[in-house]
Length: 143
Image (cartoon, one colour):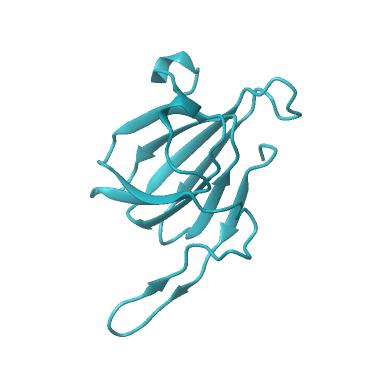
């Protein structure tokens, strides 16, 4: 596992009229403050990436659909430099993926329908603290 990345299994409470899906509490591992919460959608087979945040901690949950996340560690002094981690989040593997700043992240819609992720970020979005790369700029086989 890449240094600093956490996967925290979460609870789904089944109820007759609809389920309750936990996401995050202020006492949970990975909680580092609150800046904003947003949803992002991805279509089946689509890939979004690569993005690196220099300050933002991501806390990602997938309540709808199936999304594959790939994380690449290119941090200069990291003991896991050069490594990839690959996670598939869905209701079958329901949990929160905490990604610290300084890591490249890409994600791919893997379900048959449009999928949604929830990000509980520690700071509000600020375009000046993130960088983008084209998919082919990091050598990873998405197949």
